Length: 325
Image: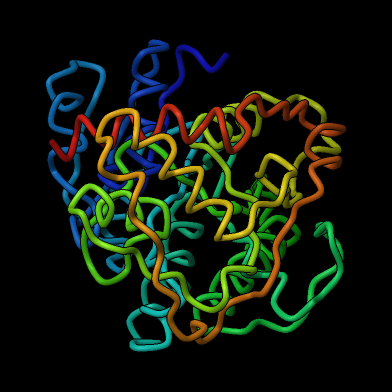
């Protein structure tokens, strides 16, 4: 358990960031929060700001001075701030690059200068690109299929160079389709699970991109929190300066996902059980199948995820129903 540390969470008002803030405050850590609210929401951290152990800085990782202010005296950085979404990056590659690469470099540089002990960052399964092999193993990647994927791969390259050049310890966590509480169901770039949930609760037919046979290793937020904490507390030197898959290690196709969500929601709204999906064109830049090997994380940093898709969806749909109603 991570306790008694001064940590920084960038992107603290976002989905994953706010859950990290919640967890680490509850364990007695001093938490510095950095966000510019471009995609994060004030409501996600409103209750945490009242905690005397929490300090909020409204700032932008594209501004090096904001980064330097945020890392002052910090021992561990959890870098979550980024512009997510493959479609967003295709529509606006310049802004995605500015945030995800220039912003990342700013945070790494500020952390190095402040002598931060460990820099843990959100990597992405999109790095596997056109590599068809399953399950995905960390040392076997293909060519990126979107500007977003390019930016997340460049993050890994910079982290490796900064360790070799400056000695800062880093760990990259390649997230696989994370879902759970506080994931925004609204907006053009909402993730598939909250989009399906809000559509069905509105009595609408969700759109599945393609024929529904695309598959993903959907990963509940609790598994991600566990991975970040393990990355922070692991003492095995071999575990440092590595990238790890963060997933459950099971594959679910979009049609199966749809019916799992519908079954869960029908416990709250019986009318949902009659809604059938609509099928649309495949989404540009999408990887067809994704399944993670989590052997490396288990071996080197004792990553032991507990929530499969069914357990995670049960908790997530309960949260969404209360949030949306």
